[in-house]
Length: 150
Image (tube, rainbow, N blue to C red):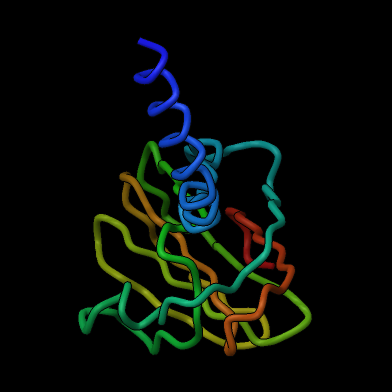
């Protein structure tokens, strides 16, 4: 019995570094679900973009817009839109060019630049959001969600 406990403990110790190295690639934040007339408006979140996965490989060829840069495998955020919006803006801003990828029930959209944004009508459903940097280096950003044009 002592041998079995020792084997399990050693296996756990051997796997720990591997599991820890995977954890950053699996980080994802679930944003607060939104419906029209949400408060506060805007909702603001901060994070760090970058990674080692080409954004274009996540977007596939079906994306509307150019998907540039490097990100992490898992989305930075998941967002639940509870009811259709006639107008909603999702905007990323930071100290350098960034790219924004949004996969949702009505398609896949990419935008790049100093402050990329997606604005317009949004249908109810679940959205996955990735943010990338040109070279994959970690860079701070600010995500703003609003029902008004900013």
